[in-house]
Length: 135
Image: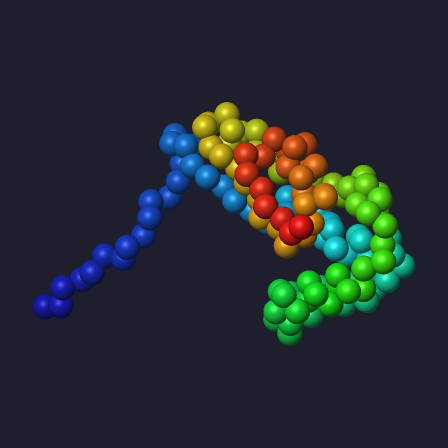
């Protein structure tokens, strides 16, 4: 008889014990893709969105896609971040989830391939414990 091995699976976290939730910002914490919003503000939204879509489909790696999109945005004034920040929306239920997790002793963080000029403000609004984004 063959001996069965039990898989090495971590227990499912519950709210009865503190934990950690880390999520992405674009299309997760917020409904929009910030870099696509920057492209729209620059009048090149379709070009930026096309590169984003190619990256999401695995046709470009993240670094190539980011470099290509940033190159198209290089002449934008930094004030565009204020405009974009005002146009993004938290995903329905995201803030309630964060508040509920905090009430149970959890920590919540985000990681983003986007830009700290927007992510820093979103993190403050959402009362996040940790965040990191591109500079």
